[in-house]
Every structure is written in C-alpha cells, then in structure tokens.
Image (cartoon, rainbow, N blue to C red; front, side, top):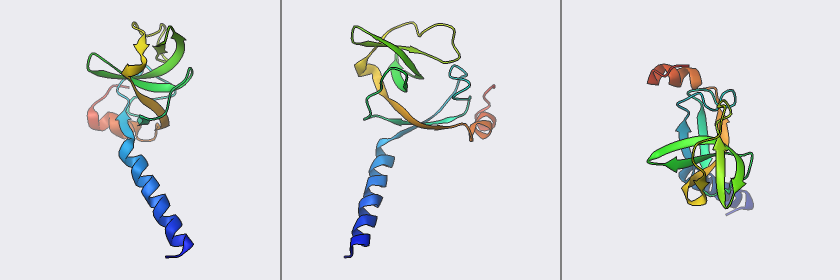
Length: 120
C-alpha cells in the first residue's frame, strides 16, 4: 500500500466518521432569520462544545430548539433566536445541549418550504 493509498483511506474513514456523528436538521420557524431561513439545513456536531455567540441545538420537553447562546449564568446557558425580541424563557443546562451548529445553508430553503408546506 502506497502513502497516497493510506492517506485516501484515512480521509475516507474520517469523512464517514463525521457523517455518522453529525445530525442534520431543517429550520422550521423564522426565529433565527436572517441567518437561518425557514427551510435552511443545519449540521449539528454533538461533540463540539458551544460557546457564547455560537448557534446550538438544545432539547426542552421533547422539542429541539436551534438558537444562539447569548449568555451563561450559573453554569446554565441563555439562548435567543436572532429574530426574537427576548431571550428564551428558561435557562438551559449543559446536559440539554445536543450540539453546536457547525454548518448551515439557506440554499435548500425554498424547496424545503414547498415540500413541507412551511410558511415563510
């Protein structure tokens, strides 16, 4: 096996590992406009540690929320949608955070809105 063969297999394994661990979500509301349009695709990395200013996904009462971390108080995070006037109602414990948004694209938004009958 040559060095280039080895490098190819290492890169292929790394890409497969990343794709298997990442979560893919469509944005269903306008709370993160204009950054994330309704129907945008977000890629969430469950391993990355989000910080203040990052967009992250958290779970509350069985629902997933993708908003920006705007503050940390007493070991809990304060989230807010960029298009919302006020912060999310409840502080979020670190255990509720499902991951950090590491990539997003608004390109599929029009198709997703049409396919899922979402209002803009």
